[in-house]
Length: 334
Image: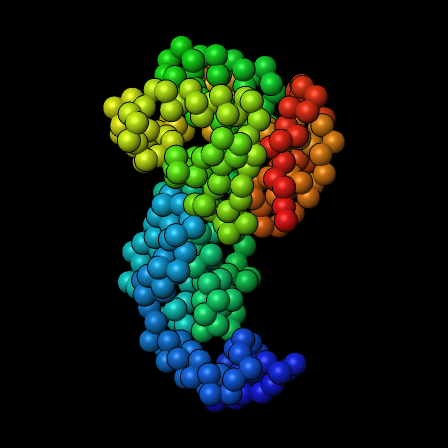
């Protein structure tokens, strides 16, 4: 039976599951509100299914997360439901998840399995940290497989060879890839970027993988010219930046990612590099120019600086940065 107690004027709840005690903050100073939250938590923990949990998570996060990210979370639970048929979330165990990973490895690559498992973990973290209806994420002791190791940062020569071929093949794709390289945006952020968030001196990312990804990036001459070039090729009434000459939104089905692979192969660049490598290259170039990890973290929109350290773990690269070229791209935080 759950009980209420106060800690620093905030109400908490304490309860025992399988002989172990858990404590969860109810984030309120009002006792009546705390009792109401406790009753809701008790009810949802016993009745909330995995699909219902996803619906809650989606409705709360759809405004700032990209469609690509939310669809990956949905696909991850669809994979789990093949075996478990939409279980109650408090019935999901570590053993279930370990067996599920083994099942996925029968037909998918380790990289794909890692992606599905990590997105599934995000959903259960929401149940623990935001809703407070699970005392602990069953993923806590699950060892998720490692995907294929990649050398993510390209040399400037490799980037230029890809962009040169892109210029001859498709102008919008070329300018889109150049934007990814010059700003360090995620592909999903560019796919969901709208013209009403682009100003003369900056642009705002409102749809991102994480809340930290919602940021404003200042424009320099090169990035401003990229936006102008794309705009000149599109109909005047198009909503999204990544739109074709005919006004068709190109954010679906990883259009730009497929274009990158095509131009990469034509340029003779190794297959280990993917569209996301442009973001890693941007980060590595900033680090090579002696920008601080804090500045790079803000510019990339990382929640944790440990992620930024992974991006820039190799500081010395065969790249060249013009003096002051990236100065205006560093996010100015309040």
